[in-house]
Length: 177
Image (cartoon, rainbow, N blue to C red; front, side, top):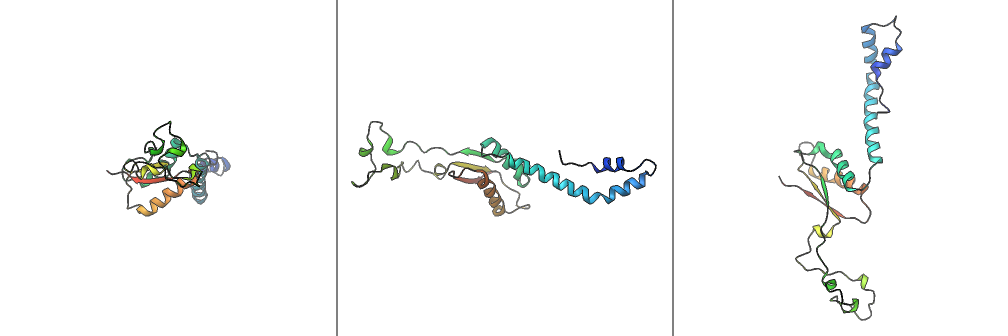
């Protein structure tokens, strides 16, 4: 990594050979331990920032990112998966291709001419919660000793909202064991 500093090597190179000694080197390494811990935190921050900068809303990258970010909270070796929702079928009023827009089964007033503002009708048994959203995020069970389910859901929603496209909707489903 670009920002990693090997403090042991730096100390050995900067101490003159005639002043060296095992105790002096260990003492200098102990003095620089706070700098080493700060450098380790910065390297971790730089890696995470680089990953976030390269993130897109493509499903395969987005799944990898969510799994990378939240795998420490999973109770088992599950994975977060994203799948597109299923379309509920053909709308009732568009089933016949040769029916004109004015003769369809939608109820509209005579003065209404803009058909696009009207609702699309589906059969009642085809409409589900999953068909009303753009995609579904399935997440494995989490370890409630590490984090509560509400905090985990809030963190997951924040990460998804940060990278999803503006007009896309979603639901989060917990996988059953």
